[in-house]
Image 1 (cartoon, helix red, strand yellow):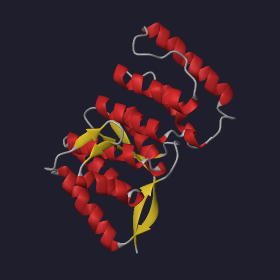
Image 2: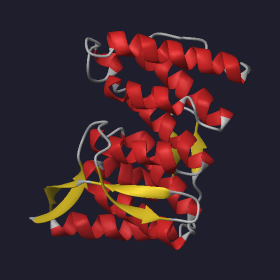
Image 3: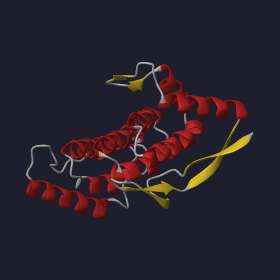
Image 4: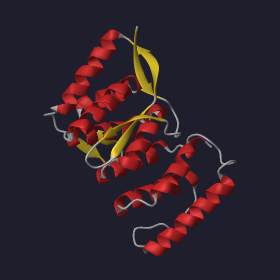
Length: 216
């Protein structure tokens, strides 16, 4: 057995050192050890490299997300593949290129719905480009963990209406509540809605059930 590292689970967004980029600053999350076989790790590394130069057709199914043989296998492997994908993402970020790879990583995490990806997704939601922020919000929506509600409420202040719309839908799906954040609202209406969300969460947050919203 060999040790690799994975993200600590939850929405605490524990971070390590910064990765400076031209657009933003991304924080590396703290990693915790997990074990896998050398054979499986070799396969994960090969699949991750293949994503960088992917020539196979990748398509998006509206229900299941991104699809291709490489993507599907990484989703099937699940948690053991997380660290290689995250390290690959950070490497692409430091090179200021390979946007397609970064988007594929987020698409894979949307389908994986692994708790250990959540702190990473929060970093992307807070600091990625517009498409990455929307994809991270959708991934958190798909997983539906109520521990991420506070982070999602903060993301309602995003500059992109696409991100805001996705975040608002995620909050409605996870909590069952809606405080009037829609694409068509004015800036003042959105500010009032965010204030209502925060007030509600400040009262309810400590007693709201924790875990996947579809499990209670």
